[in-house]
Length: 82
Image (cartoon, rainbow, N blue to C red; front, side, top):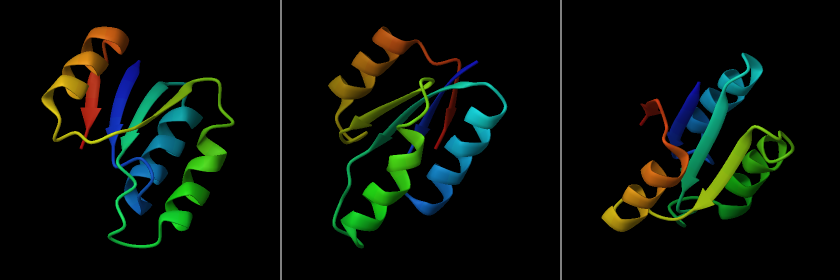
């Protein structure tokens, strides 16, 4: 299954992405890496996810409707975890 996970560099989003990858799903993760808290911590959470061939990382903002439309057109996720 192809799953879009928003906030994939966050605590919950990265844990969800890890679990989905562990069960064999293809994960498209999006995060804007805002400076709300330590950006390096977010990058550190993304690093192990990026080792998976079934993980695609998108650094962008879901507030941009064009970005979201492009993700859905290109990757055609079957589920969204937000």
